[in-house]
Length: 188
Image (tube, rainbow, N blue to C red; front, side):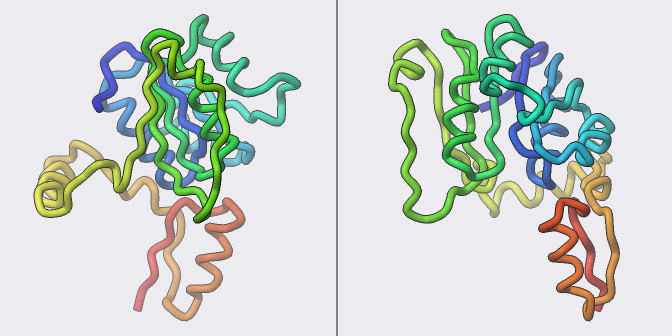
């Protein structure tokens, strides 16, 4: 699946993977990229990387999917759930344009999770897809990623927020868990 130029996108979760989705949407030419997270500290970096708007679902009295439909006038063309919560997955699907929206599940829910949603969301023309490792095939994709990086088509370094000595590995995990870090580099 390829985001089309001029399309609208919603990214649920603005951690390292979600920010990578924002970068991808911008690179594909999306005209509106809405970042969604409950941690407002992530909004500045999301905007730097291409999000046109950032919202916190806790700031609204109505469900976030209704907010997104109102913001876009019809629902987004593409939504990406990058958190791994089944409730958010259903909201991401419901936020899509009724006749043509595509929802991509990137976040991995806990093993044994069950998802409940209104089947009419699919009968009305939405598409729901899963993605494992972005759909990339390692043998073919690693050379493309390296070439893209060397040609400066993208810069994953913008996701590195901390550099720590190896003996501070637990601090690195805590920074990530608390939402204060996107990605940390450990030096050995």
